[in-house]
Structures are given as C-alpha cells and as structure tokens.
Length: 187
Length: 123
Image (cartoon, rainbow over all chains, first blue to last red; front, top):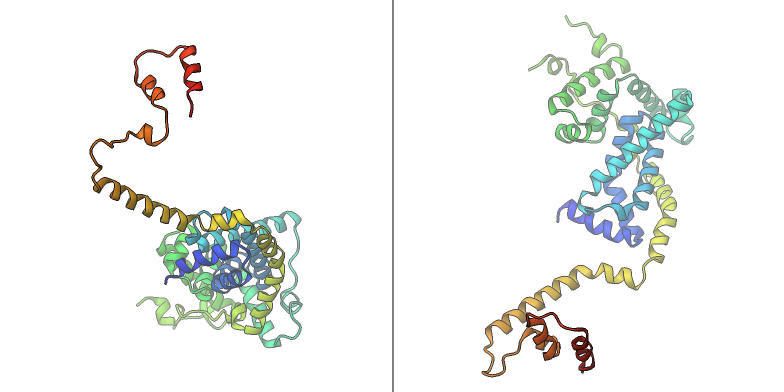
C-alpha cells in the first residue's frame, strides 16, 4: 500500500476525530514539515513553534482538503505560509533575535551542552546564508529531499538547486570551520 | 570530477544537531505537546459525529452498491422477454393516470376545465 493511500485513510479518520490517525500523520510528515520551517526560519525553536501552529491549522482546516492524497503538499504549503508570516510579523515588529547560545539554551536546560553549542553555531551559520541556498541545504541535508522535490517546492530548476546546495555547503563549512571551505587555500 | 568533489565540499553537512527526530526523547516531547494542543479540535470533531456524518462516511460504498444493483436490474429487465399483451409504458409504470398521458401526447393545449377534471380523476 502506498504512502498516499495510507494518507487518505488517515486523513479520513482524523476528520472524524481519531487521535491515533492524527498522531500517525504527524509521525509520517513531521520531518518534512520541520525541514520546510527550519529552511525558512533558520532556528530550531522557531521551526518547532511554526510546525506546531501549522499542524493545528491543518487539523482545523482538514475538511477543506479536497484531495486527501495530496495531504503532504497541502500541509507543507501551510507550514510555508505560517513561517513566512512569522518572518513578516517579526520584521514589522523589528524584534531583535536572542543571542545564539541563549536562544538554544533556554529551550531545554537538561540538554547536553555540547549539542546546544553545536546547534547554536549551526543556527548562526545558517542565518548568514542567503535564503535560497539555506532552504536548499536544509531540505537536502536535513530533510532528505531530492533535488527534484526541492525544485518543485521552491519553484526553481534542479540545476539551480544543485548550485545552491554546493554554494551553501561551501559557505557553511567556511563559517563552521574557517580552516575549510571558502577560506581554504588551494595549493 | 569538479572542484568541490576534489576538496570534499559536496559531502553532506551534518545538521543532525538541528534535527528534533534525532533525539527520541525530544521528539516525544514535541509530539506530546502537539497532541495536547490538538486534543480540543479532535474532541470537537468526534462530538460532531452524528447520524448524518456516519451516512456521509458511508455514501461511497452505498452509492457503489446502488450502482451495481441498478446495472444488474437493468440487465435482467433487458434480457428477460415480456409476455405478449403485457407491455407497460414508462408512464404507466410510474403510476401516471392514462388520461394525463393522452392529454400530454395530444397536440392541443388543455383548457383549465380539462385540467380541473384531470385533478378529480386522481386515484
């Protein structure tokens, strides 16, 4: 049985209020939704919040979904719009982002300090990328998407997706380890 | 091979520190938080589940079964020969009075008196 067929059954059950079906949809598509949110927002905590909002909005609007087979694409559009709205509202309010280490550290004080620091460094490096390369590298290296899926999602060509990925990896490596990447001197 | 392959630049980056699913406990916490937030909407949907929504959920199989029965009935009616002299028109089968049928087939516009008369002829 294909994933899409399963999705349509799960959607039908979730529409009737079946919590187990909703949980299963979440487990199946959380990573993709999170990758889209993180690719736009760049911070784990923001992406998780945007994801939660998007899932709740999707549940509320589940009756509007005409074709349950296309649940994933429909959900990702909701995530994308939610994340873009968050960016826009922050821009209008001109909220200063928290310091990287604090932003990562306040989420869960029990977390391993090394992971918290690595996350903070990654978030800071991602924040310095242009939007398009950031989206591509997160969707590819974290979300596990193919270039075809990324191209469709972002409305770019597959060639452009590959170029953005290459550029983003080089830049991130340079930012994370100045001994590598763009700062590396070729012999 | 391009320059990036030579320098190892096209290796995937390890972004697992940003992956909530890489930490099962963290992901379980996120799932739990989401389930709690969704509980109200799911309960509202269950409460809405009345007779009509049950019927709506069954409409596809019911329509499919009805269609199959209709096709089977049509095939039977088309293949079984009718006895001579028992030919029934569609109007008769539908219970329309014969006088009405004759009036409808006629070329003249019925008068109000004729229509009133037909009304009194109803079975």
